[in-house]
Length: 95
Image (cartoon, rainbow, N blue to C red):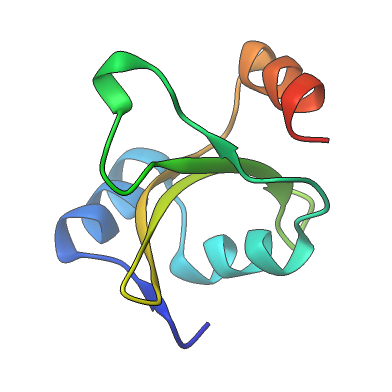
């Protein structure tokens, strides 16, 4: 994705904490088949709003991706394997 921005700090977190590559995050955007859901939790509120979705990679690894749109770019905040609660929430609000 041309407009995908991943800071060095987020890149390190994705790699070291979650074992996720930027290409896997891109694949999630390519494979998304639901809505973006705004993260309205108090600790996660940002301006512009943090949006999330859950989608599979090309290898069927399910990831939850959190990002913001800013100046025409997608800034990745994090990505990780969702737990059952994340999946249930997205099934209810994002599909």
